[in-house]
Length: 246
Image 1 (cartoon, helix red, strand yellow):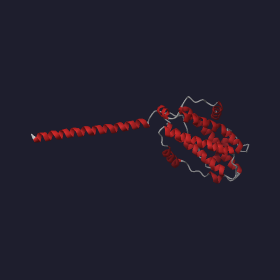
Image 2 (spheres, one colour):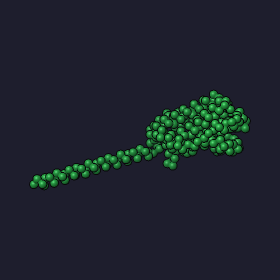
Image 3 (spheres, helix red, strand yellow):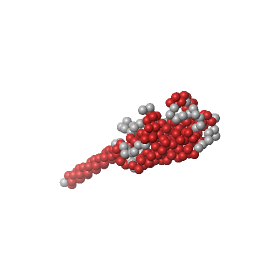
Image 4 (cartoon, one colour):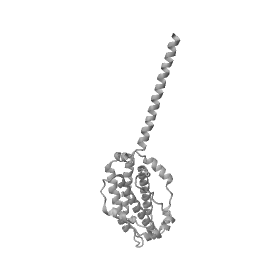
């Protein structure tokens, strides 16, 4: 009889053990599922947790940057042969851009299933930091005097960079990890050694502002793809339309 009771107790303990293991496995599977759902949340869900005021501030600032680039170009670059939006000059100067090792801006596309919001925001921060670095190198050159407009533009780019990083945090992305990945992938450049005279420095400044203008139009489109409630600035929209040749 005692042996029978002992066997029953063993069976009962084994049943409890199996139930406990099953519950733990279920909890683990549920946790993995929830993490997967959060990580692959639809774009609309990410937008819901991003502060609309931050998006609007970024939109307002990129419009201002687009308006200030021509002003900065006019105040900083005196050579009449260097004109923003001149497609012929752009082609003629392409070889100098390569010779100076001026890196191209990262590609931006409208946010979609094929181009995630995380990638979009990461590429915006990478591009903004790239142009900040280029403008800093050119501004430090003794062959071309820096102007107040250049300083103001740099401050605006830096402010926009902070806003985009804030959006990354709000969406649950990790800007520090992305910055580390970007640093390992960013092509090296040594622009300073090519700024040997005033003309070459003006060319470098022109090419940088031209590329920044192109990239800023892409940022504007990307921010518009996040929300349809933003009011369009007709001046900057027309500028970007003209640049696209539409």
